[in-house]
Every structure is written in C-alpha cells, then in structure tokens.
Amino acid sequence: MKLSESYEVLESIVVGMDPAIDGFAGVLIELVAAGESYAVVETAAGRGNRLLLFRSRSQELARYLFEAELRPH
Image (tube, rainbow, N blue to C red; front, side, top):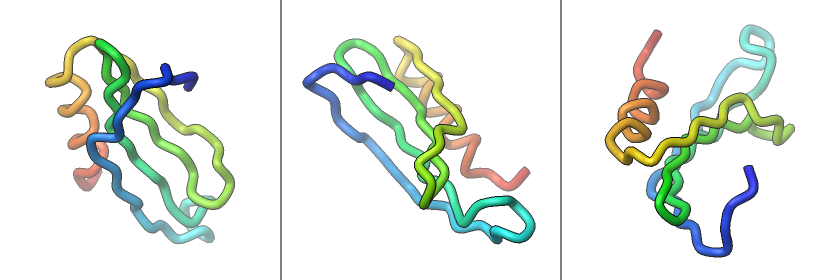
C-alpha cells in the first residue's frame, strides 16, 4: 500500500500462529488513517507478504473490519 506522506497507525496488533498449521508464524494487523481515508492492512509476520488490504473513507467500516479480524473464526 502506498501511503501518503501523512499517515497514522491508529491501532496495530500481532497475532501469533503456529507455522505448522497456519503456514506462517503470525500476522500484523493495522488500522491506518491516511489523509481522508482509512485502511486495514494484514501482513504475514517474518515474511512481509501482504494478506489483506482494505481501504475506505468510512472510519467506522474500517474499524469494524479491523475488530472482526481479531474475533475467533
């Protein structure tokens, strides 16, 4: 995700996982404000591969997705 010069990480969390079961050691989940939009970004810990990028002008929608990714599935 190419962010503007002015962005702010509102929240971030690392979720640990079992590499044998999940394929990687964990995921970094970030809620980011960039200008007039918001983004939820998930990145594989250790490898840096992006797993999810969601952008919206709605902070409520982005926060809802961020919190949904933290709930057990």
